[in-house]
Image 1 (tube, one colour):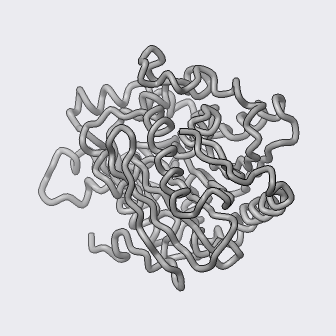
Image 2: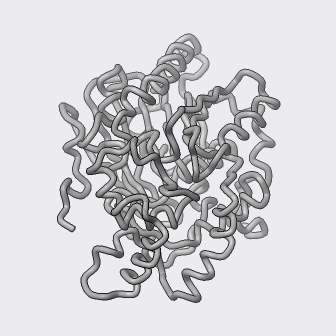
Length: 381
């Protein structure tokens, strides 16, 4: 299929200085952040994607995207992190058995240290995180591998992953089936575009037999990979046609080992270590809620009412934290939205982003009144 929008384009963000900052984690992976700077600002926003996506989901040229919206509404210094789950890197395709603990322990502390190196210690950092990027970031925050975060907006899922019934069946057997029965090292939503009659293309065609809701094979594969529904990731009517068609570019391929960690969390009803007896992860807690009263960072939990990937996960997480620290955190449910379309839908600038901006402005004002108290807060590495 001929590409309609350039891969990894930054054309969706205009009138901003765009710079890329590479950095290295303590477990020796090279990662990067893109900085979109228009004005000097005391409040810096860091945006974090989920598994198989990347910075591209926040800078789409086909609609008024999140980075442009923030730049236009008073937040003039926006950074997007591509961590080890990003489809801009090869790590999802190389058979690495990374887990969410690796990200919480290595990726975010290194990213924030690099960010602070360029913006200094005095500026406030607000984080917007999505999907498994949100789960792992919240593990970092509540596991105290990072600190100095002024506020967080968490989409879809955080510390209490919950999934639909059919998804529970899929995720419990799919890693073994994909790797050891079918012999795939990863699952690729673009398999249908491959040349020749490959095993991946045959598999994609079989999946499409069960998805008659649209004529985009990548969309069908994504519904297999995540969630339960036709489609699973979003509401079709919320997506621009070109966004729907280029799903294979925006999401990318991935191995299935992360699914094993998610399944362990789903069974336990909360975020847990993948290998609790491994001393490499001793810095992470066994219970991520044990420090909940100490974490003063206010969080806005958001989710789509029609979330068919992580259902009511963020509602449950907010409810649990509300019992521990009443009034500290907030919750907002977006009607007629699902999991991914909260950021990638064609009308999000009107339907979703104003609520995010309201929270950020509220926290900026709150932080300004506490500036002496927050000054000089660093990164807990």
